[in-house]
Length: 195
Ligand SMILES: [Fe+2]
Ligand SMILES: [Fe+2]
Image (cartoon, rainbow, N blue to C red; front, side, top):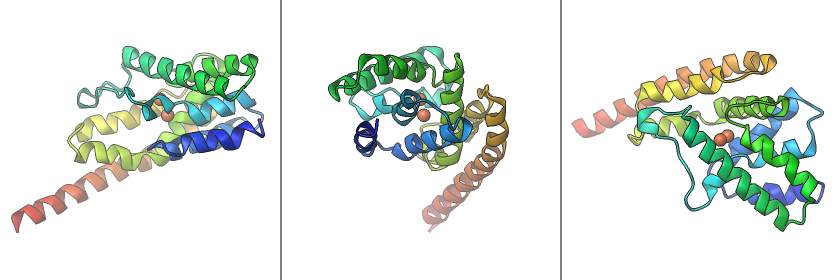
């Protein structure tokens, strides 16, 4: 693990949302200071499929955040890519076999470890991805209502009680920030186009 961790950090670094991945680890340790090494690796890499050509994205215009088909494709592809990468680092198969299920469950939870990684993913999303959500609205990828519904889903899906309590203020701050930032940017655009 000591040898693997810096390599894993370097692997996720070029991904556009690597800050979200690193913060997922921080939240996981906050929720479970005794989290196992495979679970830490799963938290650090859980969305990595989006870094590679053919990466999946939800149907943002429709606000289909909880779409089972999309989320299954996303988690399956990440689990496949991360498993291949771990094997290429000569990580024992027994370790890989503990990473994969956690990645597969990071959107909907399921097992105790799945619920933990899902909660950490939600906390990290609400904590770090407000700018990303605002950009979706400003780029015309989704509506302000759907954008806020994404934040709501990330909050409401949390099954670990302690995590839900930790997430509540982050969720409320994120909602306000999306409203404020979208309003500010659109007002600025209107001023520029009125000149
Ligand atoms: Fe994900
Ligand atoms: Fe994530």
